[in-house]
Image 1 (tube, rainbow, N blue to C red):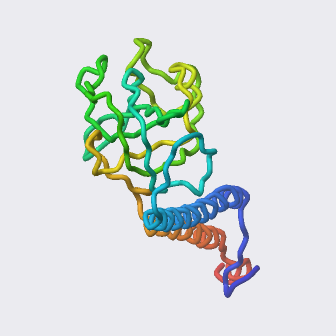
Image 2: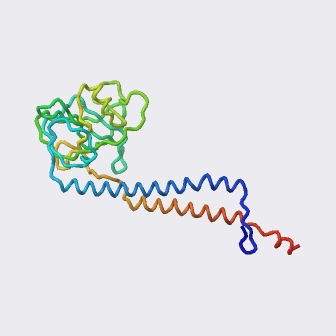
Length: 247
């Protein structure tokens, strides 16, 4: 293909490199657009669920994504001897853990994991934060959090063999049930910020706004366009006739 006094004559190596990288850049761009749409849907769901009245969780409820961030209430008591800490949680630049306490539902054989919020991790990681909670019947308000996919992990999820309280990287309902003997609902209960039995809580559906993902998508598409332009420019050669005229 000839353009003016230039002829487009792609080389093998630039073509292979472009064919390898270009689909990746385009795929990353569309992935970020999908991420932006997911975040918009999640923000809208969060708003909608806050406008709905709370549901009372009295017994087993099957896992349902429609319940994500739904306002809820529970009656029962904390199972204090089965405390769990979820490691590597950061708040205002400080390392800490989420305090997860099973909550036995009143007149039910089931318990639900209550995320009571963030506490700082002690300097000596061989010991765990001291959490004090009164053992009494409570009615708690909060939100239902439908857990996502558990990351692939090899071996025991529990980082400490010292019994309870336990330290974990991720929530694994099966592992907790196996070790604690409790029967758990397939949800996490995000304790309301107004409840007294919690710690640092600021529950939000997403950290990064959809506009940020959209801007990343634009960057990936821009890089893809730049790659195509570079590929064309690099492979434009002087036509043979022009070279002969210059001799």
